[in-house]
Amino acid sequence: MPSTLQRSEPKVFTLDYMRSLRFTLETIGQWPNRTLGDFSRRAILLSIYHKFLVCWFCFTETIAFFYMKKHRETIRFIDMGQIYTNLFLTGLFLQRASLPFQKNYKECVKKFVLEFHLMHHEHISEFATKESRKVNKICKIATKVIYLQLACGMFAYNLSPLVRNYYEGMFASELPANKSFVHSVDYLLPFDAYRSLTGYIIVFTYNWFPTYNIPTAMGIYDLLVFVMVFHMVGHMNILYNSLKEFPRPKEGQSEDPLPSTREYNAEIFQCLKNVIRHYQIIKEFMGDMTAAFDLTLCCYLGFHQIMCCLMLLECSTLEPEALVKYGMLAAVIFQQLIQTSVAFELIKSKSESLGDEVYAVPWEYMDVKNRRILLLFLRNVQDPLGLKACGMVPVGVLTMSTIIRTSFSYYLMLATFAD
Image 1 (cartoon, helix red, strand yellow):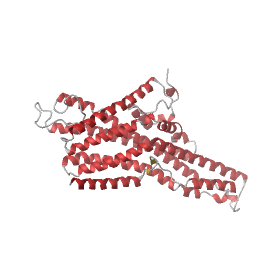
Image 2: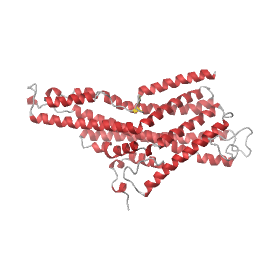
Image 3: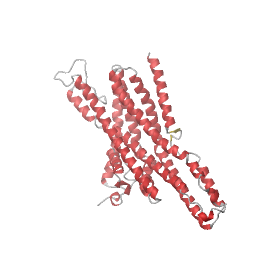
């Protein structure tokens, strides 16, 4: 018997990028199938798999931490940076893996899929249809870019240690003296994975598992947020167009300074009601996104603050190995911070000029009732929309620049202490 979801699958999943987004989050058990009405056996198994992943990565985080604690005195400075990076990445994964347990996240995704997606609003106007198609193209491109980043990151993270082991002669019949295998992620294990080829192969093979799950949780959740942001900007563009196309008095009525025909003001009232309702839809979804992702973005910004400083500190040695290893990682981290900040800045910049568009509506031709409604609407749109991490830190270009400046300041301070 087909599942409920299969019988009435939302039409947004006719889009390639939405299917890819759902499928990839399902591979790490973090798509809210049940909230969307899928109670099939597959959905139940994915839910169980998600709980297993959380428990498993709590365990691997623990044994990775104990490895660092046990070997802290012998680990090189250049390798310590990678261990800290792995610990922070796993911690960030666990925070994001907690999202499917939260009602706000599940309701936000459900509302986006069933209500807010621009496919559900193409009936508003011809412009809305064009805007929906444009946003879908942008989302499709963003999806390809994120997937390309994930593929490159996963292969680079696992193959770099493999290449290093090869050039150091670790695959020869006799292992070099005072050398050991290098792994992308290190654990405290009951067997030798650093001087034994068998142990190395076991850990190397296993490390593909975390290097798929952790970057996927980071990249695809970012993609989910970007898709929501792009659709919100699309809604703003449709709202702008509705305000620009506000009806004016017919040509014969313009001689009267205050035409107040019943038909005209009834039309104006309906238009005001439509744009106010549309703005409320946008504002409510912004509130839903804030409730769902504010803690996630707070942890994300904190992660970038720490990692930017750590990468700069590692690169400060100016050793070729450090520059290659951490220079690329630093570029990726800065790029992620910039693209996330710019995405949310789009919403803020769009909503900041909304007041001007509302004021440009031909209010001088309205009756008193419609003018009062417009005035209340004008007051309501004065505060720009935006998402605040933990309700405190606005996510945008200003916060991004603050993080980058602070990272350089911390780096200089730590470098001074090191000297």
